[in-house]
Amino acid sequence: MNRINVSLDALNNEILSKMNRGKAKSEEIVRGIEEAVAQGLAIKVNMVVKGINESEILPMARFLKKKE
Image 1 (cartoon, rainbow, N blue to C red):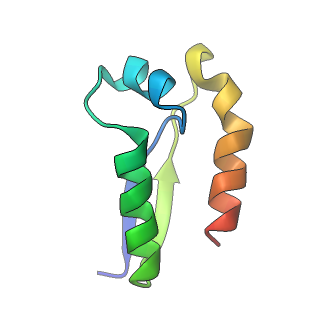
Image 2: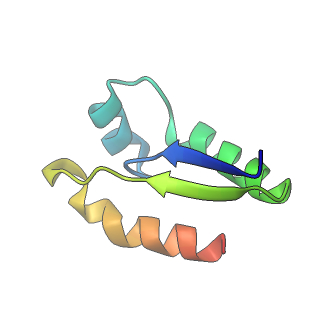
């Protein structure tokens, strides 16, 4: 395995919780992404954009740009 797909609809935990009914916390997902990057894995992040998380598009883009 050299690549993983991750779903992360928001970095803001409150927004993410509303979108995924509290199933996961953004900090946990981010920690997993950072660990995968540290292990040399390529990451593909899927983000579904709905009205509730439109404000998260730029923060997400900035976060992911840093991971390149």
